[in-house]
Figure (cartoon, one colour):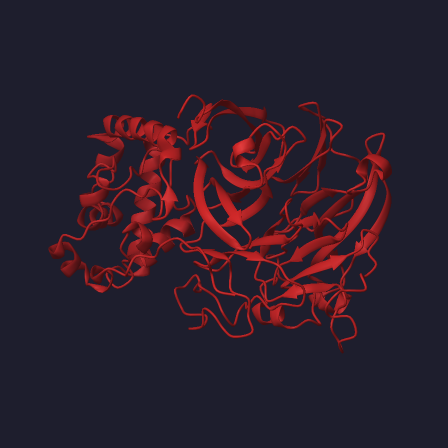
Length: 525
């Protein structure tokens, strides 16, 4: 299947491979990043207005500031002035490109994110690559200077906005659960007014009518909270009101692997919550123990129920990319089971030698988003690519989604994984993002509060700290709109029965609640 919609990719500019001196002589510049070609920009008015005000404030604070003058003799400051100042400003206050001391990083705030952006560039946003001009040590020195300047300027990340404007709505942003959570990962909403939140360190929290219970649920399973592991997704049975089943997906460890280092794999269990205790636990999926691995990343771990009541869940490749192509191994797959863990008769790998009968699709890298289209019942997945190549896929039983034999991404070092992007016999993504926003949890909009958003797909992003609203018809993405930007790393999104949108953030660890203030189309002919 060919990708039907993707951000327009600009031709790689000639200056991307020039030497440092040639680049400077050429006058090559990069502009302030906004939205990629093909994206809606009007929805970001509120964010960019506040962004511009913060940029002006940053300029006032930093021009001639002692903190920057104190660093004038550092090698990082000298390199910055030579290479970066013409766009980002001599005092980091911004200019043709964004401010670097306003607490906002458009393409990831982590040290490694910034290093990769300088080294490899962000071509779609006219950010040149400097890997041919600067050594790794020099890039690290520039990043040291940037981080020190940001810290000593005394400007911290701004709080989430109180409202924003999209194409369709003016939206109120409520800090629904403003504190009390530790690395929340997933959110499940019940029709009775309760909600359930996982914390990666192992806590399962209960929210009742907007109030967070002060203590985690007692007796939940032990998790391996190392690397990207921990207590990850939570989901409610389609008949939760009748049977009370709550499903958990987490990193499960075996104590006797790798010479004392525990091995681990994604595991799914279900249980009930009675008197704030976890009871009646049953194992839904546990992989063969010989397939457990000593790595600590790419657990996948998203759960969703389709319209037929089947339970779908994802397991990432666990850092062993070629395992994703082997149906005999659990990692790099999306699995399908009955809610009690039994295997549906129609699963595509039943009867195949060595294949795990739970496997539904394969060739996945790290799927951290699963959602069911309420109109069709079809299951969509979003998954992290490597450097570039995040994907949105429409899942079909038995299909190969290509990883690592076909990808739009590269290794984080910049090295090629493969020259192949599309291949006969592989399912190409419906949509891919390059550069990668680090897409995570997602959900189709339901309920009555946002009728103009109904059946559109909300996709959260970690690295770019944003929510995107995708308009989907059939197997095509017709439009993308960035709704909320720079409020925090968006780990999950969920709608309650009314249609209010809830957003799980990391950094800050909180949950936001989005409701409409007014319809932008009312009174417009």
